Length: 91
Image 1 (cartoon, rainbow, N blue to C red):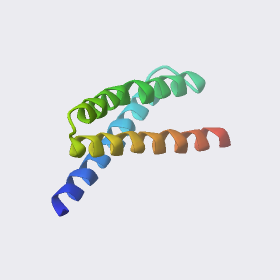
Image 2: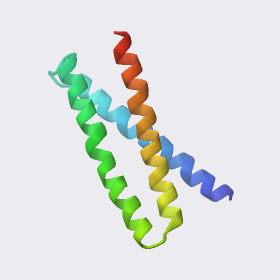
Image 3: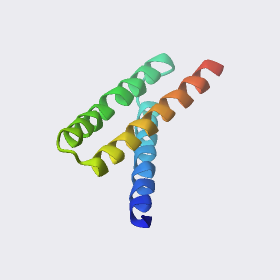
Image 4: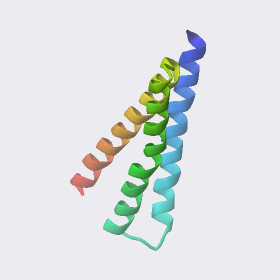
């Protein structure tokens, strides 16, 4: 219902916000260029591991709502990763 949609949208916004913060942190470190990219991409791999584990736990327990939420987070990360690859390839 509407409440579920609101939770999904808020969570999606939180995922984008979290990676925005990581990207800003990468930019504020002494790292430049490829080193900053590597820092960000490492975080882009590390952070979603927790969500993958939560998805699998939900799957084991038949928790469809949790599976849907974690799947949405993982899909959002895939979109972020793909967009950044496109941007970085243009440089």
